[in-house]
Length: 100
Length: 346
Image 1 (cartoon, rainbow over the protein chains, first blue to last red):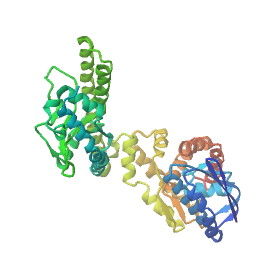
Image 2: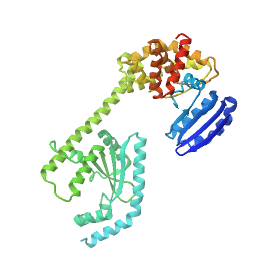
Image 3: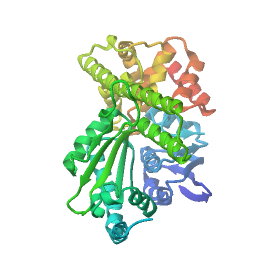
Image 4: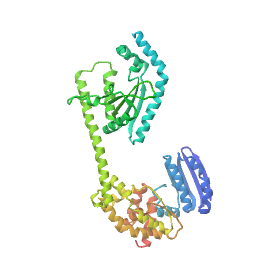
């Protein structure tokens, strides 16, 4: 699992690749800390190369969204695959994020 | 030209500047703090120190009236502008406890008008705080009274030309209209508060058919947590934790379903809860997802309701557009949900 953070003007983009499972969640939570510090910007979670997300991964996404909401900014989840889309749908979190 | 006496008052004013500057910081801060503690939201809390030029003008006109600077009650002024007339009286009560009021010099301009006259409406208190040697004027007025007073001041004084009686009459007539508008705003607020109380009582008593469906009533309905038992059943599938999320966006979905009252909503919830649970069990049962949102119950109720009433795939797209905002992803989500529901014969 790899996380790359890129700042782009008023946006900050996190590019995830691999499987965001329970084992990877601890490191990913650490990797996304710069996102929480930049929560006043629009946050893009680029999931183009993300293959899988577990509950632990969802919790990371939720913590990012919570921090962004506290700063009045939004979180966009971009390019999720069908399996991840289904996870968002069946847990009822789909309407919590802007999914593109 | 000012005489020696007035020059002495001006000198006193210059020496008092540091104290007045402290008042300028501390008094508005104290007022804002007390307003917040009393839960009163206002348009503005302003304060100002009388300018040297303005004081000079005052002294030139009636300088002999004042023995010293402390006789001038508006050397420092604060103003609270409220939304509602009721709040002027509430804040007045708060101010009376906060400061020592010089009743002989305070005046309620609202009470000065004859039955058939209109014009400037504000409550002026002359206050004192033990910490400061100078009294100050505190004006309380509504936003509409403030608008009238500001425009009246602009028209009446800025031009420096005396206004013909006809125009003054028209300005004062407007004050009467704004007084009516102020009263109406206060009445509307009181009636909305009563309405919300009545709705909450009806929801608590379960008389949902008597409550029309709208933003206020749906909010009251949600406070009774109508989806809790379904969400808990769904959470039990994987021993999941439930994360609270806002549900107000489902109002438009229930309206689109043709619900007119909270009773209609409740009947849908009852009718489709079991199928909604089956959908969730089928989806979550094969996963180890142990976190769900509090929207999962109502989301699944809506999905099964759409499918049961023949809404099909397009109905699901419209539903996801309503809760997620219009988005190209919604078609894929609808397609996936439709196929899943078909496979378990919902």
